[in-house]
Image (cartoon, rainbow, N blue to C red; front, side, top):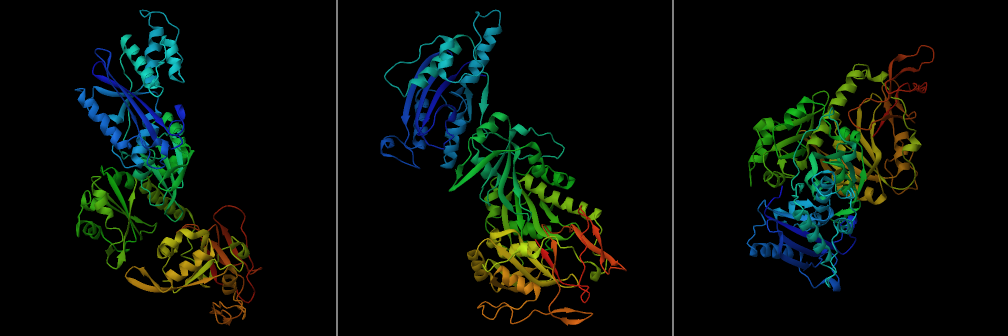
Length: 633
């Protein structure tokens, strides 16, 4: 509440759109005007206007001013020359609506890595103050009767006409709006009203925990797409700088493989801020433009809502920074993690010691190689992240700035996996020869053609899963097509040590084979070099079906027919048709699988359906009741 002190009318112009659309086109400020008013005397005590020189897209006609940081410093010095402390709580900026500060100055300053003085983070919206004051006046019996003002004035002229103030008609066209603002402010003060609706701009994203039982206002959520994969919640909050994000309100979305997919759900404190966020559609983070769309409360809860006491207990320790570790040895201990951060250059301590380390585990209790670590202060973040790709034992560790929502997502998936496995008949207890999964996708749909957009991996550790392959491929993993990781299993359902990967182009496959051939995959304490070859969809099918690669082909993956060994029959050529097992995210139960003895009359195995729909029995060849399994991711 301002009952004394000073208020300063601030007017901002950019090189682009004005009014309600100010800042929505991401144009830079080119003009700033200030009028300082002493509230007690209701007199103007100082005026300044500045031409601002844009730096991103300079033009000849806009080269007369100073850079934004210089202009801000000059105004700060001018206010102090008036014997006024701009950092005093009795000094407030007043703007015509929300955009000048929220959509223009703060986003621009953030993108240019400029620190605005703290008094730019508190202001009064002249339109809201006008509606509050004169709506109150219209209904107060002691006040002079007056027609009620418009609930939502669209421009300064609406307010001037209601108050009977003549608009500024001087020669300085650019200063007309700030002078009209000053006239309205002086009238509000003269009529005995105070500025009572302060606005604040949050400069730091606060942490918070969201439960799946929370009620979320669906009118406050947006989905941001096209984010750099390494973006943290703080980076996304900076993209929306000027708008107030709810506590813990940035939820990074993860792919089925547990990697960030370039999307995030952002929760704002009100619909007003959400609507301003939507106007940042196709604004940029560096060279990338970001798409911003409406989203629902359910969308947000699916990503950010937690359902485990383990996550709540871990996240409730009051940490300012969460770091995700990937690639840990499976037998890593909390003490090794603590030593990883506390030794070497710029040591940093984990919050609450071993209690600040949370390992992510599978349904059966096995480690995944991931962990989350808490740090007490924001200053700890660069120190912790400086250890990116340093070693624990023989493994290099990847570090990423994480969020409460990411912790929730990862642990929720672990919980869902436990639930699904508890409710699904386990295949582990049945004899391997009786467990043959149903074909979910025909082979010709999976891949075909002569384009060499696939790679073949040989020599994989038998324990390797899809996520280990993705880690081995590193930056090339982002070029894998949807459901493009195919792991080959033998007749007994055991891994064969081979896999085929479908890439999004021949170039991606070539570079992957060139860079990763004979590179080592670290698995636990073991290291194995992996053979990586470029191949086509047709080559892949020939290998999997036991066909012969044509002699005319210069790229022969196998010297001759592929022989599959069946214990009951000896070498067999060619093998029977392949069977596919849908493998979207390990570990997960297949949609259908064979179980139990063969039917006594048809010699077909019984089919147990665990994913809904009708069972799909497939009759194996009479000579080969068992065949290799081809697993599809």
